[in-house]
Amino acid sequence: MNQAPKTKELQKKFLKTETPSVHSVKKTVVIVSPALASANNGNWQTAKRYGQFLKTHFRVRIVSEWDGSKSDHVLVALHARRSFPSIAAWHAMHGDNGLVVVLTGTDLYRDIKQDPQAQQSLEFANHLIVLQQLGIDELPAHLRSKSAVVLQSTTSRVTLPKTTRCLRAVMVGHLREEKSPRTLFEAVALLSQQSDIHIQHIGAEHDQLLASMAHQTAALYPQYRFTGAQTYPETRRQIQRSHVLVHTSVMEGGAHVLMEAICSGVPVIASRISGNLGMLGEDYAGLFPVGDAKALAEMLIRFRHDSEFVHLLKSQCARRAPLFSAEYERKGLLTIIENAISARH
Image (cartoon, one colour):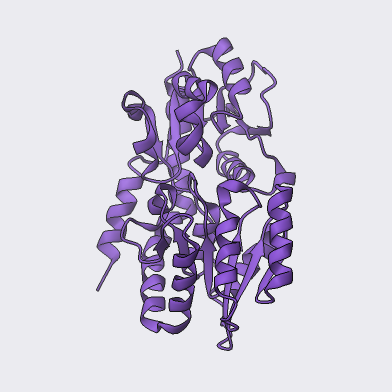
């Protein structure tokens, strides 16, 4: 079945604006990211990519906290709660003029429901950005009119040949409770008799209890390998070499690793949470109930032995891949920045 019309329809849904005109005199955009290059996480990857998209049109700075410079025209703050000091300082000086807030998973699915500072950030902002289509549903109704979906993007990679001797699954996520690595550890134990299912786990040891559990799991089950933090290029190579990416998170704003797998021709098995549904589609066949290790283990066994299931996941992911193009993200972001500048009063 030809999916091109559906893909175009989705692209139109996520991107409703055109590329703005280039300014003859560049204005300054400051990007506030709580995580900088040393963190090598999703927030930093987003900040870095935004900077690359914007630098041909604007002067761009990336900082962990805004310094109050009066020469800045737009502030793009990643994370409503963690960037609140910068958001509040900008609002005190400029009001909502030029203030753009990008909402992360912990913002959408936890902080804006209970944290007063995160809630205040939403009110202060002139524009809100969510990173997948279901994110807007989490916002209070009165804020949705100033919100836009800007899907993230990544570069495409060639699909590498895979070994037939075993199933190589990879999970990429720093050891944090939000990533639910315990679900993976439990699934590994349930798969202990499946000698042809190998799981590699990449991620920094942010939580020492979870790190201890990862090392214990590796010691008990030789099919599981915890490799700790890896560089971004090496992580992408490991994804390319795998048959499937496993993603167990309990909350996500729009996980980079999902699109990185999809754009490498690697299908995904993921938890059924709003952030993943917004990236993969609500009809995606490779979703398991959040925290359900048994369901995850069973899905991996099915992936190993059911070629039709593998083909279905690959075809569904291939249909989503065009949505994660740099051109669509760039156009959406530039339009929001241009609108933020135009709205200044």
